[in-house]
Image 1 (cartoon, one colour):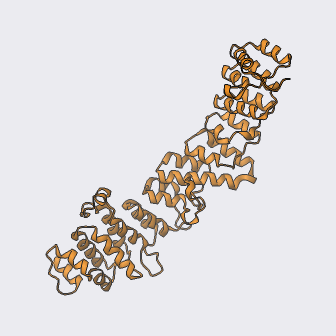
Image 2 (tube, rainbow, N blue to C red):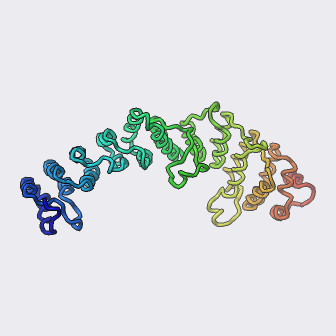
Image 3 (cartoon, rainbow, N blue to C red):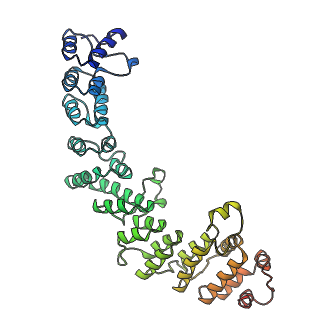
Length: 388
């Protein structure tokens, strides 16, 4: 058989394929003519046969196509057209299952085709195909995943990680439906690892758990679905994440489960520190406009602080940087916010008197508070008491 055709001969062959002239194509092959067309014609006879849906023509051409790369191209086309009969035929004539990324199969939503690829050696690990399919919310991938994982215990750890990554993703997205589906599929809310963001996959300090992601998102409904267990889970860590989201309901829920608000080595509260930081960014528009945060702007964060300190959270800055950090945040707020915060901390004994005085006893802070018309005599805490 000739190795290649002229452009004119190739066009003639392609026209026979488009017209479905099976016997003429058969005669062409029997005469020893090539079925390899020049690259500039874009489509091959086999691809045109698949486009036409002519099963006998596909079989004839697949049987006489000797180039693996052309069969694999045709296999990809058959997958995209959801033609399992063509997929089976091409694989039977030498097309390679492994030439098609499993994700490309999963995304077609065809259970029978997915099973065929899985049963014939598709790569379920490279490129985390199931995790990506879950991200795209392809429900038909769920049962296939569960059944394949059960049948292949040697691959269970890698498959488990794909489900866990997807669960972390949907916990942060706040998608209760897919959180529930992935829990049904066996995803573990307690395993620690990356999300589906490939940028941080090799950065262990950025790894997280589904429980933490639910808290960071501030979703009480999802956290309850994950069923945190005081006997197993680090509730203080979850409380700290909930404070990042400034979710009052989550903070109350975790404290109700027994979370210790004072989780730092010095007996202070990291959750409280997160809330303090958030005061300066409570209203994105105010922050972008570089105007001072009002009491209204910070009301939700202030509610979280109130819940924490009334439940025993303590502010214990370890260094002067801790004091300076809160001062810098309060400078972004109206002076009344500083007054209310110090009064709240003092009333609930959430900070030592000396610490509060150090917070206020700085030249810039004095200037900041002077706009309220406060008389600057006595201790800073005494001034605030008089102000009250």
